[in-house]
Image 1 (cartoon, each protein chain N blue to C red):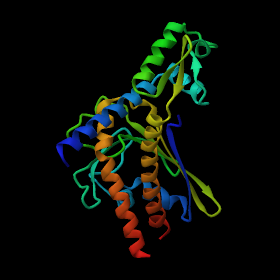
Image 2 (cartoon, one colour):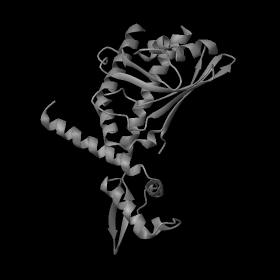
Image 3 (cartoon, chains in turn cyan, blue):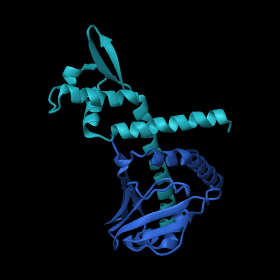
Image 4 (cartoon, each protein chain N blue to C red):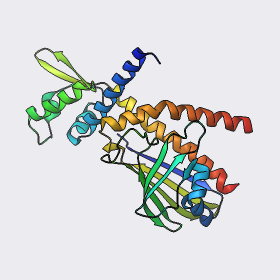
Length: 115
Length: 150
């Protein structure tokens, strides 16, 4: 592996790690859930029904923005927040990989006990 | 996000047979492809190494949680083999549970692995990324092996 592709790989790894960390919080997970429909939403809409202040919600949104799960788009004078599913898809791949590994192991167990 | 893995498998073998395949460390090693240093004992660390050719450098380490005969076998571990250069001691492991139930055709096995939501650590993920290519490769090898045999 060339040093160039290695450093690109290391960079990727850091991004994945930050996505995990960003999602490891209930408020942020609920924000992601609210944005899952694909519609961009304002801070006002995202604060509705929450006990937190708009400032607190904004802070959480910034964390999600940093790892690129959420993007803000301007609409007139306000910012709207939109979900980018790609980083979450990548995390899902991790679980898929573990899952596939179990499929392989369990099919070996099946032949082992049935054989 | 769904952060647990669940598998359901019907085995045409008596529950006692399946229990032995899961909890006898030599039999477990046969199908899991790991050479374990000693028997499983609840509360104790189980160590060994992966026996799959080319992956022998990966260590096996798990802590046995529960062994309820013919019902429940569980352990905690860090998935994806252990990289000797990484200190995992402060990191939350995932929990693997094998539950058995007797059914007319033999045994129903329910496997769950949970706790993936507690994976925030940079190093943990780094370890995963490092083994990522390795496991993908291994799965390909298994595929080739199965096809050759059939």
